[in-house]
Structure formats: structure tokens, C-alpha cells
Length: 238
Image (cartoon, rainbow, N blue to C red):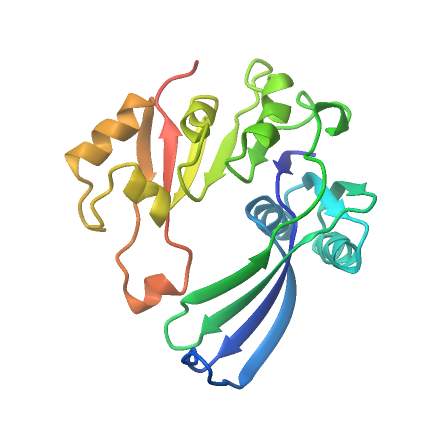
């Protein structure tokens, strides 16, 4: 295995609508699809489809949603190290997608179950893994990666961060690559201008030893159809 994702496993129910309805109104769904979601799971499914050996370590419940997550990821070609929690409940989401703009409205239910533990990571990690990628800014999840010291073994680490939460910036210091959402970039000092990267934003990024590899795009119709993310790479090894 060359890439390992560590983090959330979610059953996403995607509904495409012509336009999002007002409160107390209805809208017909033009397309309905179930997918295995979560930042780490989605990334590993994409990597596997590109022909790269990819695996995922995470937690699912012993419920129907957990079974669907496992089947969907297996079909995508992801090597699974999912740990089933007895009496647990898998995370699920309903996502309404506006067909005209690509904007989403997300309703989700939190998973119930103990976090992934250090001893539950795949055997041979990190030396047999070339690129561990934690998929959420959760300290307990990242602690599993950090205890195995992948960077000391010469393995680069990437974090997919949606927002800055408690312990997020401490986690950033342990990473070589950082993928941040629009919300994350704004909290980091981005001014919302996709053409220019403000000096405050550059200074904040550099203070963590990173430089901007790919800035955010403007909110054009084309950009809205793809995730609005910024990518950062560490300037120096630590």
C-alpha cells in the first residue's frame, strides 16, 4: 500500500434538485445516489480509481450504514482496515445539491463509538505506507498517526482540514502537506480574493513553515462545481 487515509467514514445520501426549496416547500429530486463519504474515505477512493494502491483506517458501526460504507469503498478498490464497533452507529449525511450552482446543503448525524486507537492501525505502519493522510482535524485521530512517527520514517503526512478547531494548529505542525477548505483559509487569514493572496495570509502560512501550492479559486459558476480548497506544502523538513 502506498497511501493510507485515517479518519471519518460516512454514508452520504446525495440528492440533486433543480433548486433548493423554501422552508415548508417541496422539491423533486432528479438524481439520488449513495456514496461512501468523509474527507479521508473520499480521497482514498479517488486515489484508488487513479490506479494507486490506497487503504483506509477508520471506525464504522455494526449497523446497516456501516455495511454500506464497507461495500461502497471495497467496490472503489480501497484496501479496508475498518474497525467495527459493537453497538456503534455510523455517521450518515443527507446532502441536497442545487443543480444550477453546485452549492450543497448538508444534514448529518454524528457517529457513536470509541475513536480509532493506536493499536488498531494497520500492521507495518508507517514504514510500509508511503503517504498517510488524516482526514479530519481531530486530536485523537491524529494522535494515532503521531505515535507511529511516520515522518521519522521518511513518510510524508497530509492533513485535510475543514475549519480551525481546538488542537488544529498543533496538528498542522506535524504535517508536510495541508489541504484547507475555504472556511479554513479564511480563518487562516485569506481575504476572499482568488486572484491575489494577501500578505497577512502569506505571513500566517509561512509562520507554520508552509508556502501556498494552490490558492483558492473565485466563486465562479465553474468553481462552485468543484470543492473550493487551497493546498500548502512545507518549506523545510522538520
